[in-house]
Image (cartoon, rainbow, N blue to C red; front, side, top):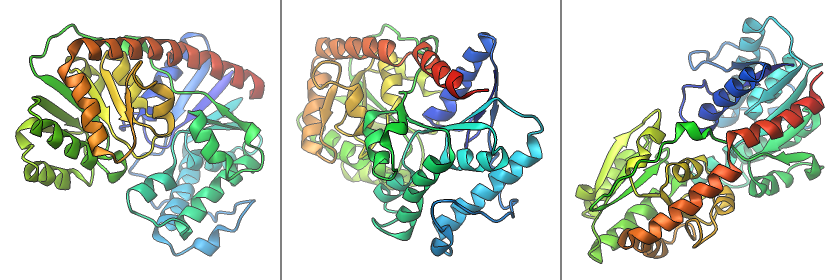
Length: 374
């Protein structure tokens, strides 16, 4: 079967999707499937000029809004790039972003197109303070789910929680399948080590939605109670300067190291002890599974896909989003007790290997591909 994996971001860009799909493609190719990657380069902007029409709603009533206009232009660019670069047909196309899915379906109307929705763009914009609830941007972006239902052959997502979210915007929620992300264990190599001071690590884009202000507040409380630690923050984003200033104000700058963006943080994570990320929302939370496979104890928030990965007290610790005192207490439990955090880490690793293996994803996707492919 000849299959195209259509990404939005190029494979070398940060994020769980961009890093996972190339491994899926490689696995299928080794099994004799004909599969290749396609994405829109960042240099391709403002090239598309064809008008955009959706079947289920009139997007032009939102025209003039900067976010909507940017989304529509990206759609046009994806259509332009697809027509320019793809000169062959496929038995099936698997897209990993709404823009990629709908644009490529426009170019290949007679080819089965399935989409995996990995996250909520409108949710991220809301949490990051870029848009207001009920505004034109949210209405436009949530209408896209109905358009996908009408035009695409299958909608997949990565957690039951996120399926519930999408279900509010479509007619038949039973059409949504759930296939959690998967990871090749060979990429993750836990390392035996003993750190005299507990080493905390977080990996994320530095934006308000990740709740890092809450993490700094929790760390300040941890320091006040006399517990030594070092927090390593891997990632970059618009909140970095603000977070660095906040660390100074809270007298935490000596305990925190800001690294900036790193392409393969999984090569770095095994040297640490505890992974913590107090997100306000996560469709799946790929980095938690990656940290588990690196044998780190997990501390997260009771949101979305994170709560589906962590059973509180068994393979990690969960607190409510925005609750700095509770987060500080959870961190204290794993900072002061190496045996306990190892037990949590071991349980998290076992679950990740069982539930989020790449081979499991391959089996589930193969079933979908055989159902919809020519």
